[in-house]
Figure 1 (cartoon, rainbow, N blue to C red):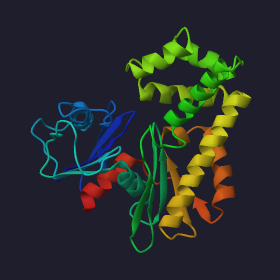
Figure 2: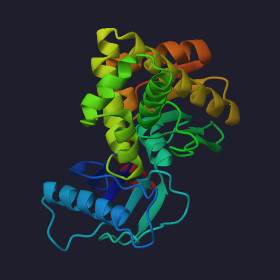
Figure 3: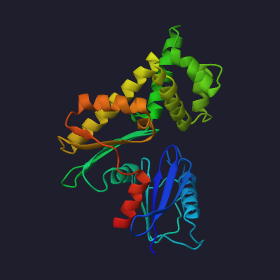
Length: 298
């Protein structure tokens, strides 16, 4: 039996699946974040996350210790053709590294045309038209882009809280931020982020908590950020459709920011307004399964 592997390596976590020639998933494993943002040449962050997730999938599949995959495809957040830290080492005959948007699209549409928008800690969109032409839009990272992402959401809340504090105004998000991160002040919160004591992933978790607890309960401030994030993601989809020359077609949203009912409703409303020609659909499979599909069919 030939074995194949698919790995989704993101900014918040890594998921690996191992399957056979038919695509049947034998095992699944999860590990920590794998992106290389801010990592140096000695970093093992990517290598360790991929190996840990793979080993857990292999254990779940009850594979023998010497088992090897014919091919493993790993989609990595922000990947642009090179590894900045230590190179991944996995038990396979061929290891293929891709941008994570490519595997997300493969999972969502199983090789067919469409646009996928991924919104987790960061955000990016990837489109493929009926002629097989592809385009990537967004994905510029947390400093210069990632509109509509969880980090972007948290950053907007923090920016507004800081601006209001400087103007001696009460901000409803400030108390939630300080309580969530157990910080005595906004100055301490910001310093902790700059010092690396609070990660981008932690801010992403705050955003999702604020959406569920705040917007879900009708909090006006949280609801405003939800609407802004949904509009940013809809705009990302529109730009991708335009770049791909698609007037209509399937559109799928993936990632932690798009899973809750509050965000789902807000995104659907924004898409109906911004891209009436798009047919919003649920993804057929997740990004890890998309990577497995590509591993089997490349």
